[in-house]
Amino acid sequence: MIRHYEILKTSPLFAHIERDNLSAMLGCLGTKEMHYRKGETVFAEGDKASHMGIVCRGEVQMERMDYDGNRTIVSHAEAGELFAEAFACAEVEQLPVSVIAAEDTEVLLFDCRRITQSCCNACAFHQQMIYNLLKITAQKSILLHQRAEIISHRTTRDKLMAYLNRRAKDAGSRKFTVPFDRQELADYLEVDRSGLSAEISKLRREGVLNSTKNEFELL
Image (tube, rainbow, N blue to C red; front, side, top):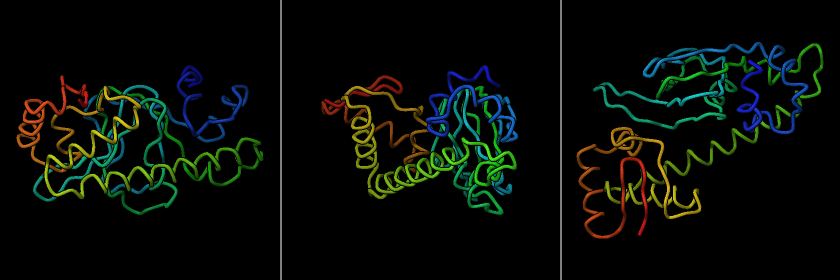
C-alpha cells in the first residue's frame, strides 16, 4: 500500500502527516486495498456504513436509483479524494447511495472508527487526521449545497449554465473539463440526456460556449 504514497500525500486526509508515519498509520487503520472494474459496486445502497475510502487510481461515483430505474449522480471522487466519509462517521444503518467504479479503479478502505477513536498506541497522527476529516466533511457539505443550488434551477439550460459557471470559477479559467460524459452529466443535473445535448448544441450556435466531449469553453 505504501506504493500509493505519491497519491496519498495529495489527499487532504493525510495533510501534515509525515511519510515515516504512513506505513504504521495504514496498519493502525486496518486499511484494505481493493480493485474494481468499471461498473462494479464498491458500496451498495442499503449497506451499513462502516468504512470510508480513498481513490488511489481511477474514479468512483455516488449514485442513487429511483423506483423507475432513473439514475442520479450525487457526487464523484477522483484519485486522492475521499468518499463515503460522512455516512461512515454518522454510522448510518443503510447507505442512501451506491458507490460505483466509473472506470477501472483502485481504492483503500478504512474503518472509520479507527480514525475517530484513538487507538491503544495513542498514535500522534490521530488528532491531525481527525481534524483533517472534520475539514473534509465540512467542505463536502459546501459542495452538496452548491449542487442543490444548481439543480434548483427550473430549466435544463439554467442548470447547465449554473454548473458550467461553477466549474469555470473552480478552474480559474473559461476553458475547463468536466468529470462526466453526456449521460453522466445529465444524471448529475437530473435532466434528460437528449434535452441536455440539444441545449449544448443551441448554446454553441448562439456563441455562448464551445465544447468537445467533456471539454468546455465559455465565450
